[in-house]
Image (tube, rainbow, N blue to C red):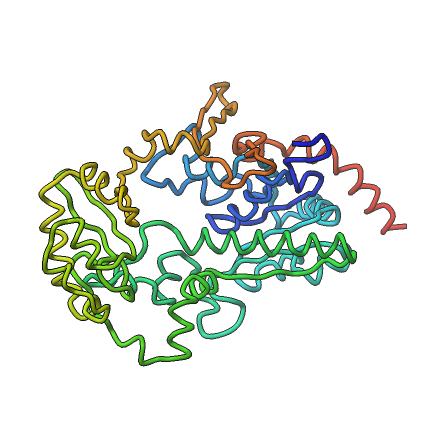
Length: 400
């Protein structure tokens, strides 16, 4: 890395994070991981609702582990936006901000006088990022913006149908929407650097789910007949890919097999019937039978034993890890995506959280978070001290 190269691409940018739950806070987290200064604006007393929504019931100190994970490296200002004095502090921050992130339902920021058009009037170069559940128009506009609900409206669970619809077991709508918003924000910051013009970037959980399915939707919109409901096999991992694409039990675990010619799999596993299936159309028509033959054979040996055979033949396959197997594996350690952060609690104790790091490297270096997630209002006193004189002067100027 040369002396002129920075591993903090967004260093010097100020981001105000008005968001709660997951999608908005993680979008702001991605900016913090890139070096931006992120101030989280929270309701006094309760703060971000995510402080109390515990993934797997896990807590660390006064907050949930998931809150720690998605708000590391931020500052916290506790402000009642219905209180004129608090609102004046926040508006002063908004006037200085490079970026504003919010994920309220449509209309909420307008009622607070913190919507994009109002903010732009005093901060023309602001980059304003919004995440909603389903966009700002249309019949779903006012429905609750929650991950499972967005997956369902977008039809994602049908892709997992085996035999009943099954949603993805992680908050994929939230996480992908956060990526899209962070992407849009950095694009507008780049445009502002070139032109001086800010802007408003919007996305939604629904749009993230539609984009996730762009292959399937493109086929449906172009050649609908190609998506007639396929008959999945007992081990199929995809509704629209033929055998052997699937997850198969072994004597001691599971083995995933991707796109591979069925005869080649038959040759390596010693299944004569598969060796004879040279017509790719049969890989669709006989999915269930093919998958059953493969599963019956793989059950006779361990995952590691089969991997030795298949890896040597350059077959696209992989072991299916449990969470414990993943985090204890040398491969997991080698990607170096773990960091441990600690913070002081109100009672003087210290809370330590081990979490992930950003999935990017800059010039070979993966940045670490500057600090742990803040306690509610941890930075309020300092921020008010910095901003109150400015607010007082401004009010005096307006009165004169």
